Structure formats: structure tokens, C-alpha cells
Image: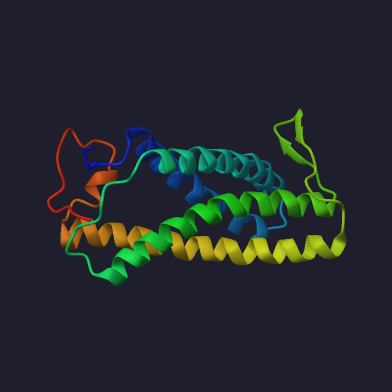
Length: 187
């Protein structure tokens, strides 16, 4: 079996699509909690379907990741960086799944409908409970901060590989590889 030198094309498409969606979601979430103007309702109307879209794409991406092995990291990468990369990737997957579910659960516990557009209402996944709503709201907020910090670390690591090490790690995830192999591989 050949060792892949790039991520699967669909994985690359999902990666960059979801990166854009997650950055937008973080800004929309921050904007939502910072305003009580009429924009709050507009931001909330975007936040809910975007969160559900991220949840569905995260499930698809996780299934793809389990089916298609990613390219190996460079052989000369220190063990702590390998472990950090592995941990941050799985943390990102966990957060991409957990945050939308927490938001959906929070709204259910608060008795708020989760509307996708004007006509499609998702069912409640938790019973109404004010104390649970308050707890999930705090958990959603802290995990959103954790996602932001993990995202920044992930992006910084990608730039480190692409601009400093130039070891093919960043290139393996870029949209257009045109058959180029990374400079250093191994496992």
C-alpha cells in the first residue's frame, strides 16, 4: 500500500470550507453576545444553521479521516510536535462536533426553537430546564474560546511548516498540489 503524500481531495475541500465557516462562526458568535441591537436577531438566524452545517460537515470529515489515512508527518519532527499535532487535530474534531451539539442542547433546554430558515424546525434534544440552560451556555462559551485558541495554534503550526520548515506539511493540505510530493516524509 502506497503512503499518501497529500490529504484526500475531499478532505482538503472540507478543511478549507470548514475553516472559513468556523472563522465566520466565531466572529458571528462574538458579535451576537456583544450586541443587543436588531443585528442580534440577524446574527442568531445565521449562527444556528451555520452551526448545524458545521456539525454535519464535521461528521463527514471525521468519516473521511477514518477511511483515508492522512500523509505522515516529516520523520525529523520532534516527538512532542508529533504528539501536539495529533492532540490538536483530535481536539479540533471533538470541538467541531461538541460545540454545535452544545448549542442545540442549550437552546432546547432554554425552550428556544432551533430554526433552519423560516420553515424547518429541529426537534429539541434536551428537556426544558433553566439550570441546564445556564450550564450549557457557559460550557458553549468556554468551548468556543478553546476552539478559537486551538484554531490559532493549528494555523500557526501550518504557517510554521509552510514558511519556516518548508517540509511539505502545509502543502499536503493546500487545494492544488498537481502531483508535487512533500520535501520530507516518513513515519
